[in-house]
Structures are given as C-alpha cells and as structure tokens.
Image (cartoon, rainbow, N blue to C red; front, side):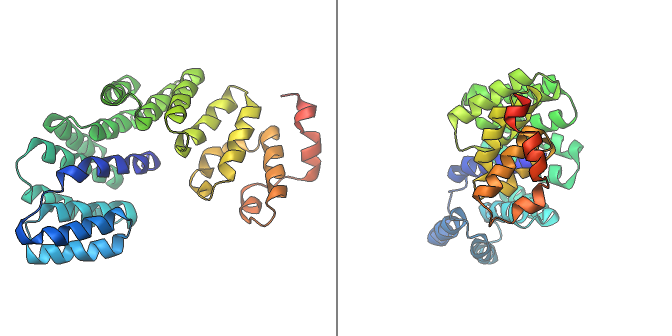
Length: 287
C-alpha cells in the first residue's frame, strides 16, 4: 500500500500549491524562494529555509506542511512528519479547504505509521471539510486493504467524478477488480490509465499481472521489456518478479540481458540457463 501512496503523494502537493501560497508581510520573498527550491526537488536546502522562516515566525503554518512532507516522503521520518503536520493544523486558519488538505496529509502519515483507524478518522474529517480527491484516494486505499471493495470503489469513483482522467482513481478501481479476480475489468482500468498517461509506469507494471492471469503472455513480455529499458525499472521490478518464472517471460529477460550485458541487475533478478531458453522458447510453447 505504501507504494501506491507514494504515487498519489504528488497529487496532494499539486493541490496544495495554490492554498499554501498565502504569504505574510515582509517574509513573502523568502517564502517564495523556499517553495521554489522545494518544487525543484532540493529538499534539504528547502528544509533549512523553512526552518529559518519558522524561527522568525513560529506561526507560519505552510512551512510546517512542507517540512512534514519532506520528512514523510524523502526521509521517512514519520514521527517528525506528524509533529510538523500537527503544528501546521494548529496555526492554520479555520478554513475548510485548508483544514481538509492538512487533515488529508495527516491521514497519510497515520497510514505510514500503521494506525489505520486514526488514518480513517483523518480522511473522514478531511472529506467532511473539503471533499478533496486526495483524501478519497487515501480512504479508498484503506478500504482496499481491508477488503471492503465496494466502499473502496465508491471512493475511487468519487475521484473520477471530479477528474475522469485520474490515473490514481483508475488504478484503485483496477486493484479492486484484480482482487476479486475480474482480470478483464482490471486490465480495462489499467489500459485507460495508460491511455491517459502513457508514461505512468505504475499502471504498466500492474498491467503485467493481468496479462499473466489472462494468459496473454506475448503482451506481458512486451511490457516487461518496456519497463526494463527504463532507468527507474527497480522501482517497478517487484510487480513482475513473481511472473518471470513463466517460461515465456524468462526468454524475454534473457533476450534483454543479451542486449544489455553490462547491466548487473539481470544476474540479481533472474537465473535461467541457455537450455531453458531453448526448451521454453515461444515457438515451442506456442503461446
């Protein structure tokens, strides 16, 4: 579940940019600079700047939010992240939209801390405040983990009502369909997500699982090769590890290893012989 949450994390950041752009008097330029550094992915530098701003004015609640994000997603310092989000909530104005965003973030932190009951409470509060899609995504994932697929579907469908092209909403519906072994429906959702965003590797990785169970091996091979050619392949390899033992998939990986013999990851991820490649060739199996 954490991997899925990492994918939707940036949804929250994008949603919050406009809200957290509120400035305070002469600190405006400094805040602009810190946020710009944060958006460029220079988190350590941004962290120092946000802390300097807090030292000048402890009530600058947007700084606490960004520090919470940095500690949660980059440093995985969950307790520190919780401390910062609580401070953000304390000093933030009593505005439903702002409070909704902050409690949605707190729901994410509780999820990472493993307290699903508290996470559910925070998502419910966030949805009551603002009804933001980020909290629907988080709550839908909690329902999915609890195998309450109907409730999970309701939340993901709510996301699609707001944004019919939401890749994360489609992924959620696909995971629920896959869980009840409706592989065709799951594949349809993943395909839609890929159509809207061809570069969305998470959907492509999950698509491989459906293709395996539907015995559409050649398409699965093409997806594995496509993923394996990307620099960020290790982030998605765990989705395909269980399926590489399939003879056709083994062949594909050997062929890829031949094309890229200098890549050390192949030796770590698959151990098959030249004999297996011959015995289980696609011509032999006819798949």
